[in-house]
Length: 100
Image 1 (cartoon, rainbow, N blue to C red):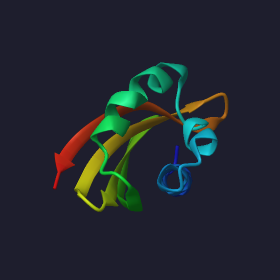
Image 2 (cartoon, rainbow, N blue to C red):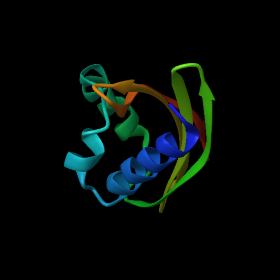
Image 3 (cartoon, rainbow, N blue to C red):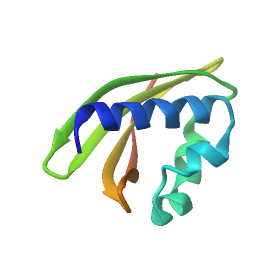
């Protein structure tokens, strides 16, 4: 997967998360990540007001996008691991890597 494709998908996913469009945001999650996403969502500031894709790093057939989510009571940075699943970029891993 190339960086531009992952960045575009990450930006769409992050924007949808902020806009509470969980149908769109969730469509980027693998089946396993749909079950695990609640833990990361619980760590996010409430209400969310902004997102920013900080960087995207590719390594072989995977990529990691670091996304900062901001809200009234702080910010967190989430590292999402992306792989191609059924021909499209899909989140297969999520980790909160920083809280501010």
